[in-house]
Length: 288
Image (cartoon, rainbow, N blue to C red; front, side, top):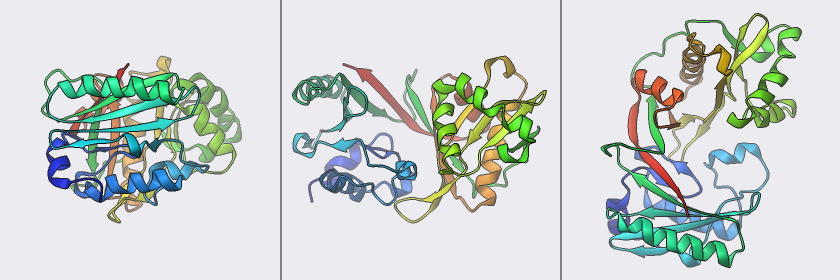
């Protein structure tokens, strides 16, 4: 075994695992970190990796030979060859100096592997004052029934053919939120239902795909979705209606929870906070 849990556990201020992302706190074990090392050797998806639903090969891999694991800090670098390539160093440790050490390692490895990007990922606890970056939020479906959405939300396939045809221009307009990629997956028949809302026979918002997967300890979770509403259609409660419809779908299809990542202070973050989700911590990314 490479990692020592008595060293690593106190450093885990937020439940983030390299190449896997946020993890339910109940599933956070040393075994997950060990699994990422084995996956780096094999080049395969782990059985519970949420990215495996998109097919292909796992792009991001741990650089196991460059891991730094000590009692007060753990630095875990990963490499992605996507685009011009990126090295990320996940910086675990309670002292702020861990960020500087991680930045130095990221720059060195980016040069070694001839990639353009070098970043530091710093997990921070939920008690962090004046947080920046991404908030990790937990929706627990076992706590209480999810309310029905207050608004017209249907799977895209439930609308008329004329309305369905408006999904393509909507997806292109919201490509920055991942909707163009989602549309490609929909056309290939490689994803679950996508929920949408309409104004004047035009799709103006969507959330999906709706899929339930199993986490590392066998618990069903609602997988992350792409979620967007056209800027000109915001402020009418459509985003909340879509989100509530998605949560209700997940609960009705047996999911125990969902983990969401929202930009601190952004529209989705404010929505989730107003809906009472539990904050598990933050992920701050620094470009080196």
